[in-house]
Length: 396
Ligand code: DGI
Ligand code: FE
Ligand code: FE
Image (tube, rainbow, N blue to C red; front, top):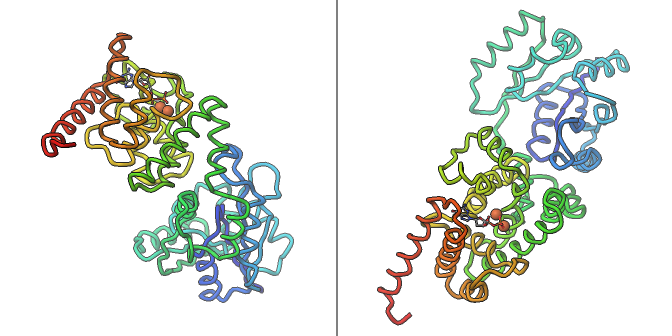
């Protein structure tokens, strides 16, 4: 009997972790071949969230092109409707009755398998290879394997594999931030990613344009450009400034109700000021969206988005840059003292931050609007900071 491994996954994108695992299983289990089977985009995920099937399949094809015992299978991608593992195995075993299939799964997945559709049939039609990484609890894993063997007569092989710390998510973020992903994935895959501009800043801008509409989108582009200039001048990471600028208002279109619901869903505390003026929450929810919808893990970027409306005492350079760029970008409608603040932004960022806060507080007071205590605290912090700066340097 021929032994064929099945390696499923989203492969968004495929990387050396996947390839290493497949080769390791091939070698350790004496397989004849490994099939790489990219999963179909789940219907509940929008195009914004997972990359189109054809790109993911093409990257797999490129990645395995130099390995004669690796093969791409688009069996799952080509099927209509929800694709279940059990159906995939049925099709494969019917077409190739003289093959025994080895279904490769991450060790974590083993624990959920009895909840998959028709687990008994899955276990009958294939041998499960649970691949564990160094630090997992093998005792629990072996126990689960025993349980499945007894309950379903499952054939399970636990395979210990050296740990490789590469994730598709980290690759996507690194490509977005223009950081190196050399040695994370095969070069021809990376060339393809660059050529098609996958995971890049262009794709991000398009997504934001769809979400925000033209007017707000132009504002975001303005913030992006000004933030990038300020980053250049003050020595912050220009790509991080761009990404934070593009994403800072990503939750701006939500209603009060929607903003509050998102905060509850993600366990974000709501301050007294935010309770009374829920629109303030668009910054915190924006940071959550940056993380969950747009793949940004970088804490510095997330904080810059979180605090772009109220600011906070002791802001990081990037936080001050986004706070300021939001106020001075060229598409802003005229606000009192805008020209003066614009000039100041390029000379003394703390002074610009302070003046923006002062101007905002005056505006909010004149409108009789609720003022968030964080805005007041931030103003006080920067006013005191400037005062102490002048005392230290009386000539400035
Ligand atoms: O989202 P943008 O319009 O680009 O800019 P933003 O996030 O700075 O939001 C600007 C609005 O937020 C502006 O109308 C002033 C208001 N704002 C800033 N601080 C406070 C505040 N509103 C209230 N109610 N309380 C504040 O402390
Ligand atoms: Fe905003
Ligand atoms: Fe804004």
